[in-house]
Image (cartoon, rainbow, N blue to C red):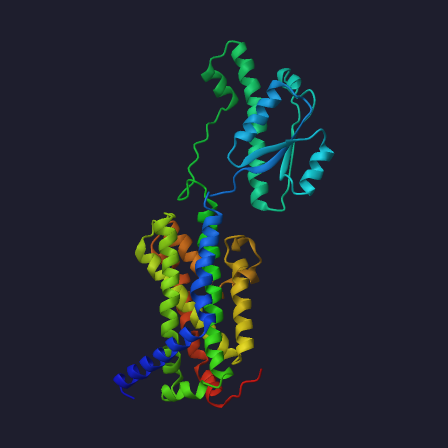
Length: 392
């Protein structure tokens, strides 16, 4: 078969696939509507960078100007908002259990007196760790408040004894911390989470639709028509089928990347070239895995089940929510079998931190291996398309 004949056959199959995409509303919703909804949902949900005005309570049995000052300072924090004052710990505990508040600070009676006389009083704070992010942020705020209370009294005491403001500050904080959060100075959770949760969701659609588009050829008894258009060459049939899907998937993925890196100005010192290459390799690898899943189990139901399982597991093994190096060695090995893991590594190393692509050579190579996986199952797919009968 000549090169021009191959191109013509691929073009006819791609045109046929465009018709299938237009006629079947599943493609419209799963390739266009749902991805846009996912991107808009996650990026707007965390548009402030991190949770703000989280409700906290206070149990102030001391009720002095010093304790009230601590409460006002806690309420002034961006992430905390004092919404209630409780007469005792039991009432505050019930409020946490009812989800009325996420945390409360307990200031016992005599706290101010003990502070002034340097008897080291105890201020307790209780917080819910049901949500790790909320618990960590509120723990930080309340710990800061307790330190500010002791520092304020210490400053007043030292000043009364004749120390200058500079001398008192040096005594209270001998080492001054100069903190520089790299690449994400605002400590925005949107930057941390939207850069891997959203791609993971988009890749779910890619996995599933790839297996679905091939499986429906068998289900609706169109496989022999496809093979006839391809001259009984399965490679031509698959290339023709995947070209329209690849164009759409790449367009959506690139639109997402340019939205977060361009419009939302997420940090990307790696540059536009690395972004384009990462998107291309990730989409092609995910489509190739969908083809491979169908080749392993040439059934619409089973191939989509395998694709769904693999894409959902990738969220846990990408290494963002929980670092991969802290997992067991077998899990670390299994994690390399998920395209999202390699996407996240390339993003983290080359896009977010700006290192050259050579630093992520293993992850780039792994995505290329994923792209080549369909070569292992071409014969099995060809046999299924020509001889197999669909079984519901």
